[in-house]
Length: 374
Image 1: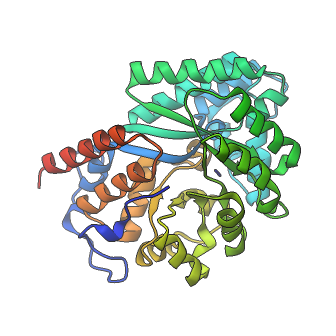
Image 2: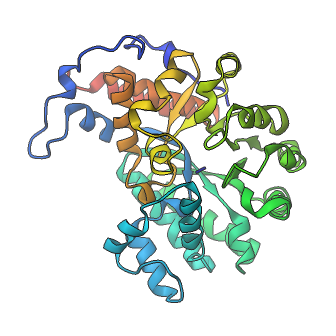
């Protein structure tokens, strides 16, 4: 909230089962900022992101600008007031807030502006490639013509690659709370209308009361058209939801998958079949899917050999970004620079980037690590 892959078991770095004292690189502050050397390493590291939502990536500045353009919205116009607005009581409250921001995107100009500005924020973090989750149903239902929506995101995608050096691809996801009507429309938009950057088909929104099997016909249609299956599952429900996503929806990656840690058989299946989990630590705490960061199951996934990628989900809403999520994962897994680079390569391998693109970005990561001063 919101493929085969290299996993951390393949690198020679430290394991979460055997905690060690913090390395010196994690304790040496850089000049003036107070950031650690590992923070600096993360900031410059070329990265890919696989679980990040379009509207959920709107910065406070952009949200405030959109709110000012649409004064009937309850969303605050002041970027400072947005901080309190984005404090969530629980997952249901998060959905309510999220949908109020969705309502700010009302025409193709809003769509294009939002998409390009999201890419600009990614460029500042050295994100080279991202699979951005779009929910076109929400925009089309609000009156944006489907072709105008596609043209807006594609224009932003082309500009982002040429002007910012960020390659974007799309996941069209079903807003699960809107039911089968939304599923049918999302499948139509994905298969019958489509967009050049579209690579995958997803399912987001609340899980409680929204069983995964009912969406099988729509995933079947999308998969038959060549799209990859990447539903959310097991974020606020148990492991059975993840099994349903795999068995009924043909999931190649799982969005969140937090509850997988409670099912050893499921962990073994994910590891054996190289089904990656799109892990979003700060999001899981913000939505109360996990009680505390110390209890986050990321280290359990790695210990079981499950492929994992690190992601920001809805970054401004959760007061985070991908660099911060890497720093969180670094602490949870007790990683050094090589381990952090391994996480970055996980995301590349789990992505739906073509082989040449994967080789190019993996090479950038390796070159960056090799050039980093020891």
